[in-house]
Length: 51
Image (cartoon, rainbow, N blue to C red; front, side, top):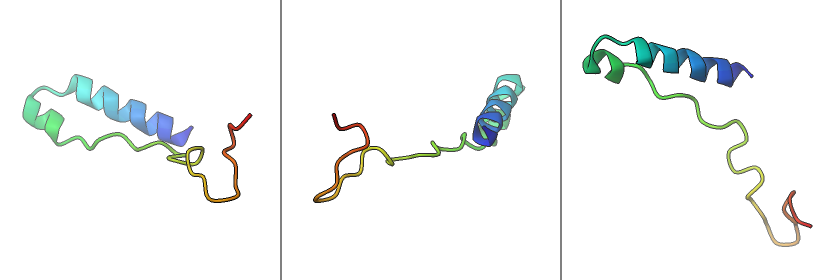
């Protein structure tokens, strides 16, 4: 939830920026919290989404 709030805050800053230069100084939003958690599979382990 915290990352969602941060992402929203940054998006609002981007939308209210007065110039392209000001918009470029705003960092990108944080990445996904569970990046790759459900896609990793090792030998002998099934995906969490396996049927």
